[in-house]
Image (cartoon, rainbow, N blue to C red; front, side):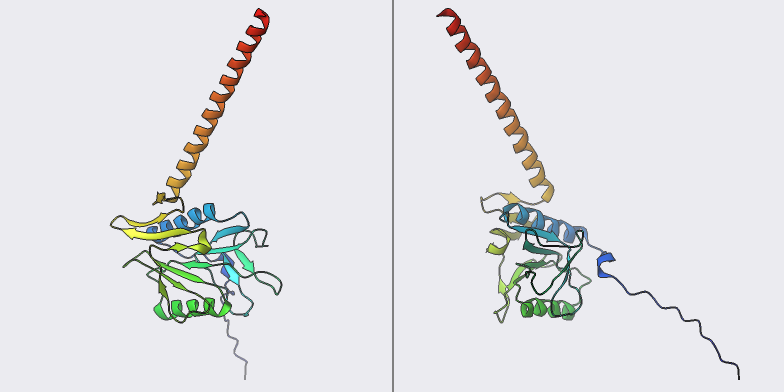
Length: 217
């Protein structure tokens, strides 16, 4: 009897570092806003990463928090993944902004895993009813955190009004778009450059006057 040969095709294993998850415009805006603003107010010893795949020590699947902080100098694979080893640090905090495609059960499992790993997690719902929740490693239930300073993110406050999610910075500024903060920083830099140029002109003018006085004497 002739042996029957089946031509089976197998999909290659998926590398999480090569996967791009679709984002809604509001989800992308809120994640970018949190990452950019927190990055500006965190100390120099901490780096804020967006959509970084994290391979924890528990040997489970990689997780990809929307925002995650790591100590400066932590070795990561070009902007995409952090493979934790026995001597490497835990993330300082993770932030998740759920999408409509996230299943409730799967999302809960992810939060509990962060808790077991010992990392505080914040959940910000941008699509749908707004909320900010915090689940710490030793906490039994999530705590409502809208309007409260988030110490692990440099003291920023995440809140919402009729115009959507916004952030209040530790110095009291309201930021609604990451681009606004960038433009403001550019304006400040331009103003500083203009002020420096004016100061240089004043110094040059004073030097000329002093020389003139010296010539008269």
